[in-house]
Length: 173
Image 1 (cartoon, rainbow, N blue to C red):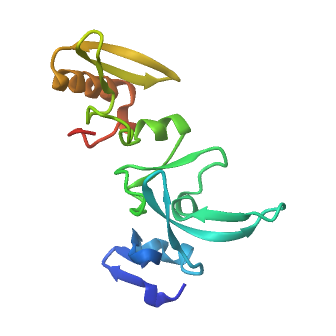
Image 2 (image 1 turned 120 degrees about the vertical axis):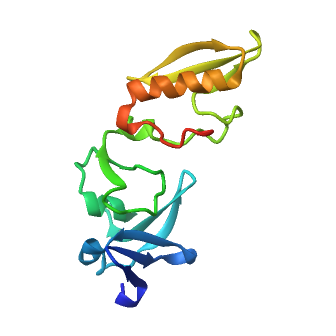
C-alpha cells in the first residue's frame, strides 16, 4: 500500500479501500497495515477491510481481515466491532470476543419483521413475544399486548445477560 492511500487526522487515520470505501484506524497502527494492499469486502451485509494472504495447501485463496491483524485474537476467537461498523477499526471499537459474545452484539436479522431484536408477533395468541438467546438456548421473556413493551423486555434482559456485548443501538435494533 502506498502512503498516499492513508490520510492522517490527529490520532486517527483513514485508509482508502476499493469500491470507494475507507476504513478508520488509530494512527499508531499504520505500520501494522501499511505494507499490504487492503480492499473492501462484504460479509453478511457488513463491509470489512481485508487483504489477500496467499493460498492454502489446496490452492484456495486465503484472506486476512484488518481487524484481526490489529487485535491478534486466539485462532478460535472472534473480533467484535462494538458499534457494528466493520470499517471502524479503531482500538476503542474492536475487542476480542467468543463467538457467543460476538453474536450477542449482532444486528437484528434481515428477516425480522417487528423492527426490534428479540421481538416477534405470535399470530395464534395475537400478542408480541419477547425472547433472547443465551447459552445456546432461546428463552422466552413473555407475551405482550404492545410491541414496545416486548422490545423493552428484550432490552432489559439483554442488559443483564449480554452485559457489555449487548447491542447498543436500542432504538429499533
